[in-house]
Structures are given as structure tokens and as C-alpha cells.
Image (cartoon, rainbow, N blue to C red; front, side, top):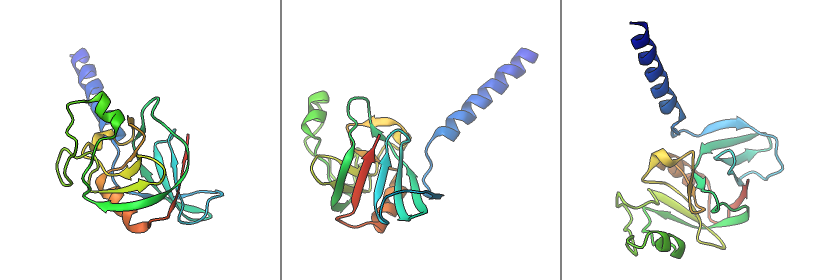
Length: 170
């Protein structure tokens, strides 16, 4: 009897741990002390968090999925485009790894990995975007894009404009 109770308890605790580690949509206001100007987006890939700097002491923090091993990058860029329900054309590297993938996935399709909105980043094939796989947010999962839950990208999309500085650190 006690072994069965212990196994049930272990299974319950294990299930609860899985549930609590899944990223949930809701930006958090957090305290920060930083050198970035208000309005700057800071992505800390090691934390898998995106910060929108509000002022010298506050930021909105969002969970994100970031580049998997060998696909991460760091640097400073800017948002150069904003799109709702964007169509997606897989970059050459993705097509090479997944040759059966279609050349274009229409916006709004449940198979479109860009989710409900995307903000493209200058100087490359990267974007900050929503996702059709919410369970991937919080992990090292992408080819270099910053992946957000759809409600979170919708919130961030409304707060920033084309030209916003984006700083990605490891």
C-alpha cells in the first residue's frame, strides 16, 4: 500500500513540475538596473527572456524560445518590419534540414510557425514572432529567431515600432 501511495505521489509531483515549467503568457513588470534606453528590447538568450525597457528601473519581461545550440547569435539590430498573420518562407538552412517543407506557409495557417504576428530584424533572416507551438517557448528551439507566445507577441507588437533597438545577449 505505501509503495502505491509513494508512486502516486511521485507521479503527481512529476506532472505538476511539467505543468509549472511550461511558459505562460503574461508579461511581468520587473525591476531592472540597466544601461539601456527606454523602449529598447533586450533578449537574454541564457535566461530565455525578453525585456522591454520601460525606464531606468522597470521592464516588461516575457518568456521566449531562442536559438538552439549552434544557431544562437548576439548583437544589436533594429526592428525593420511589423506584420500581422505573416506568411512564412523557410530560410535556405531550414529547407536544407527539412526539404519536404513547403516553400511558403500562408499566414493564419495552423502550420505557420510565425504565429499571429512577427517583427523582422534588420540585417538577417531573423524575427521576433509568435508560434504555433506554445510548448516550445522557454527552450532552445529555433534557428535563431526569438519565439513568443501569441498573446505575448500581440502585447509587445502594440508597444514597439519599426526602428526599435533590439539587443541580443547570451
